Structures are given as C-alpha cells and as structure tokens.
Length: 381
Image (tube, rainbow, N blue to C red; front, side, top):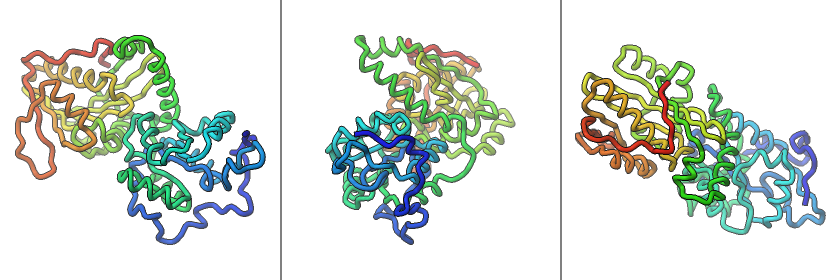
C-alpha cells in the first residue's frame, strides 16, 4: 500500500464537512465532561476517522486520502504541545504504508496498528510515551470502540470525530511555552533514547552513565515562569503536592525573600530535555520547606528526581538550615515520588491537616543524606 503524495495540501472533498459544521448539539459520545486541558496525547483511529472507508478493503495498494481537517487539527495540536498517535484495529501492513510516507509519519508518535483491543493499544502508547493513560484521549468514529476504552480504561476519555472542535476549544488559546512547542520533537528524541537502551548490552546503570546526563539547577528567571507553571499544572506522576501556581503568585511569593522558585534543566548526548523540574521553596533560618516539587514524567526512572531532591538538600544545608521539609499530597498517580521521599529519609512530621490536604514530611539535614546518582552530573547555575 502507498499513500497519495502531500496529503497536507489536499482540499476538503465535497462529501466531507469540517466537524465544526456537523457536530451534534449537546452530544458527548457518552464520555460526559472531558478535562481536555489534561490531554497530552490524542490517539486517532484510522478507518472512518482520519480517512473515509476501510484501508484493507481497497482494491489498490494506495491508502485512502487523509481528511484534510484531521491533518490540520493534528498540526494545531502539535503547535499546542499536544502529541498525536494512532490506534487502529486493522492489518499491520497499513502502518508500514503510513511509515513509508515521511510527511504523514512525522505527525505521529508510538502508533499501534494491529488486531488487539483499542484499550490495549492505548496502554502500549502510554507506556511508550511514559505518561499516564489518563493523559490520553481517543478520537474514534465507532461507538463500540469508544465504549470498550471507556469500560477498560475508565480514566481515558473517548470522543467522536464530530467533537474535535470541542477538544481544540478545551485546550484554550493562552500563550505557549517554548518547551510545549518542542514537545513533539523531544518525544521523537526520546524514542531514539529508548531504542538505544533496548540495544545496550550492559546494565541499566551502565546505560544511564553512557547517556552523559547533565542536570543544571538554579533560581528561576522570569522567562522560566510559564514553563514552571505548566509543570505544576500538568504533571501528576511526579508532583508532590498539587499546589496550584500562576506566574503572579510566584512573583509575589519570591519578591520578599521568604520563598524561592528553583528550576532544573536536563540534557544528554541525545539532546536537550528542556526545563524538566521546578521546586517552590519556603525558607527560614533553620528550615527549607518544599511546598511543591514537580518534574516532567519524561525523566522518570533516570535518577533525576533524586538528583534534584539531593541538590535541594545540599543547598539547604549550605544555607545553615537544620531541617528539610516537603509537602506531600498522596494520590494514586504520585506513588513513585512518595517512595523516593521515603528512600530519602523523609518521614511524616505533622499529619494534622484539613481533609485532602498535604502531609508534611521532614528529616534532619545533620544526618547522612541520600547518595547522588553516580551517573548524573549536577551543576548549579
């Protein structure tokens, strides 16, 4: 199978209406209210969604033409920092044909084409991207497939193509960070990293050492604020307290010296990750209190969370503080980060709180601190 050249330049066919003109009034495909602002990756069905007809039923080797509005939407999502993937129950040869067209293939990350259930495809996509399944959204013309995903993955929303304009509206039109614009490219770089890791013959630690990872940590500049706020808002897996932030609040807190916002950037031999960590710290003469620690899920499992945490402890000790505290709001998503806190010697110091509020964890800075990840080069800036 092949694909018509330059699909992005095609014009809408006479029998294809833009979904904005054809969506049903009040319809939600059975998903209820969808938190579109939490979506990190939109997963597209192929037959009847991205194109008309069924690819494997074609008498020729040419794939059906993409619906131009769908390609426009995928490009708009990328501009908003939202990834696109594919989950289609069809012959794997269809994916081979898609990959043969570079202009199409570059729009999608971690595509899944085969005969497995859609819910299984979405699990594989989330695993490949290193994000939670609840950060995915399925666009599928089949009510059955949407229902299957809704039943097997209750945290995942599934909408019909007619609802795509609601998705774009729900993502908002606020200013984008440079990191968001680079997100699709960075996930492609991450795919190269993962492939290198699979082919590496040594241990996991040896591979991490070979990556030449460099973590740069320092006080946030004004230009860093939008990305730091984005991390606080959009991260769940590596978010300690869920404290809501906005640039105005951060500026107000840090203006008088009682708080600081510290940020971390990461790079390795494959490329730059960008700004991947933020910590809002309240400090007194004898205590550093981390009110929020948030890191990108892209750095999970690489020792970066521990490296950032240890750097914060070192700076606290250098400032003369005797105690280090962290606000931790337990959720089903941030178990990994809470385990790290325990391994770093942080224990509950005061669990008197409003229902649903954060737990205060703390430890003495006069006792031995956790070891630095030996494969991670950490510098201050």
